[in-house]
Length: 122
Image (cartoon, rainbow, N blue to C red; front, side):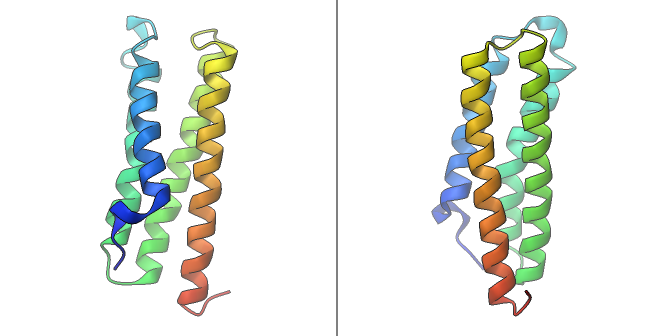
């Protein structure tokens, strides 16, 4: 069992969720049930699944939740790209958020690889 609060990837994904909530406050109200809802859910899902997986009893279970977290990160990246292309988020802001998501995706992947090695899988 890992202490999720000590994981850098969890800490960074919490920071990202806060930034996404701030970003969605800038979007038009008519997106409340569209992109805003999706982006908020995905951003929260990243850290939530890391936390849930860390509390599971085995490496393979943790890896499963990391995979879900990774999927949420890719969903969020897609939604940020769409928001930018619709000119709902400017290039600089969208780029900054996408860079943070990409960093988290890499960290999740690395953590998953470490778990594979610890579990004896290659």
